[in-house]
Structure formats: C-alpha cells, structure tokens
Length: 411
Image (cartoon, rainbow, N blue to C red; front, side, top):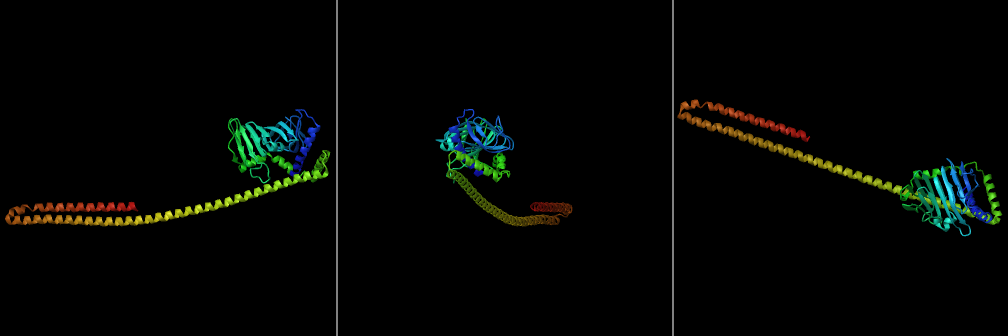
C-alpha cells in the first residue's frame, strides 16, 4: 500500500499541472489535494468523503471516532488526519513551474501528521500549522501534533541532522507570543499550554509514542485490511497509467516513474531498518555495561560491609578483653585495699587494748582498789571492737553488692 501511495503522490504532481493549466477555479473552489486513503466516516460541511475525492480550500475535514484519512496535496505533501479530529486548509498557494508557494492549515482538535513536499523543499519556512496555543513551523520534515483541551503536544518524526537518506535536516519550530522551542532531533517532543511559553524539547517516552500512534491506528487498519485484494490494486494502477498517458507520458516514462518511486521507498525502508537495528544494538550494549557496573558496585559495597563488620567484631572482642582485664585488676586492687584496711584496723584494735592492759597492770601494782574499779572499761573496749568489726563487715558486704551490680550491667 505504501508503494501505491508513493505512486499516487507522483501522479498528483502531474494532475496538479493539468488542473492549473486546464481549470481556472475560483478562490471558494480552489483545489488543494485528493483523498488518498480513508477509514471510517470522514466528512466536510457538505459531504462525506471517499478515496479519490477532491479537497478544496477552506473546507473543514472532520474525522469521527475510529476514523481517519490521508490527503495528498498538489505539492506532494501528505496530511494524515487521525480520529476525532477537525482540520481546515486555510491557505494553499503553489506554482508547479518554480515550486514556490505557501501552505497554512489549522487544527482545531485531534491529531494531524504532516510530511512536507515540494513547497517546503524550496522554502522550509513556507509550511505552518496553526493550533489553539500557537503555531508549528515545519522546516522540510515529518511531524505529528495532538491538540487536546488546553494543551498541544508536537512530535518530530522526520530526518535528523545526520540522516542516511541524504535529505535536508528536518526541524519544527513550536512557538507562540511568549517564546519558541526548536525540535531538531528525531523523536523529540514539546508541549504548549494556554498562556505559557512552549516547554523544552524532550525525548518521547514509549507511553507517549503509543498515544501518538493510537490516533492513526484506524487508518493503518484500513491499509492492512484483507478486503483490499490484488485485483483492486491492479485496477487502481491501470487507472493511474491511463491518467499518465493522457498527460502525455509514454510507457517507458511511466515505468521509470513508478520504478523510481518504488526504489525510493525501498531505500527509505532499508535505511530506517538499519537505524533501528543500530539503535537496538547500542541500547543493548549500554544495558549490559550498566548491569556490569551495578554488579561491581554491589560487590564492592558487600565487601566493605563485611570488612567493617569484621573490624567491629575485632574491636569489640579487644574491648571486652580489656574490660575483663580492667575488672580483674580493679577486683584485685579492691581486694588488696580491703585486706590492708582490715589488717590496719585489726592492728589498731589489737594495739589499743594492749596499751590499756599494760596501764591497768601498772595501776594494779600501785593501787589494788583502783584496779578493781577499772574492770568496767574492758567491756567498753570490747563493745567498740565489736562495733568496728560490724562496720567493717557491712562495708565489705556493700562493696560486694556494688561489684555484683557492675558485673550485671557489663553483661
């Protein structure tokens, strides 16, 4: 079907020259293009469109739900209108002798896909599409726009700076009174909303691309439907050949034109396939490299964590050993201190009664009566010694309790 469409585009040029030479149409009935393909119900203000119908200036083309159409303009530009769309051809000026002209179309709602033709080749700034939020200036390329409530999304599809088809690098200028954004990389998009400058150019995501493709789904289904048999296609080709003959072309010229168009289509397909294959390979390589990097990073992190844990456990064991040693030393020092204190107290206790005994013995010798009276102090001394011993025992018990509490806390 694509081959057929390319043939039709070639024929339209020939038809356009005959139309401009033979027919002198008024501004109200100025011919703009022909309906190449159609799916579902597509209408204008006065009629329902069919494949092969002529499209005139200032006609509003309305595609319903699950419908779409492809209009082939006289300068070989193609306008593909998606479902739930409303498009008007406001301006169409074309001189087939010099390829000079101007195209202005307005999209009130829905989706429009544009492939620029001879007018854009001659002057890239001569094709513009008006949307509610601003304007889209096509510079010799293929692009698509979706107009929804208060927002317009524009996608650049066509050839980039380093395209393999030898075509002029394409671009779309998305702009309004508040600013502009240039889309010059294939599959980059920009959005416009009311009262705001256009957003920056961004690479389209898979989900966003699905939305753009969905708008043109009905037309693709129509092209690929099994109802279009080979016989019908042959009849269409015959009609086209007849028209070319009527234009004054010979058989050889007709064949060469058809062959050239077919070859161009093949070359484009091959180039597109190569680009896609290269992109896929590059993506796979990047993905593999990223996976390897992530694995290495994870392994390094795990090794670092293990090293830290080992160091922490070693430090912990050393600290525990140190604390154990410290506690043992403290216990030893405490025991020594308690022993020294106990020995000192015992000595003190022993020394005091000895002195008093000696004094008491001397007093017995001197005065027997006084010695009898001084037997009472012995009881007092004993009581004091007992009290001191009790105090020492209490202190030892208290120390032991404290030591036990400290051990429990450490554990």
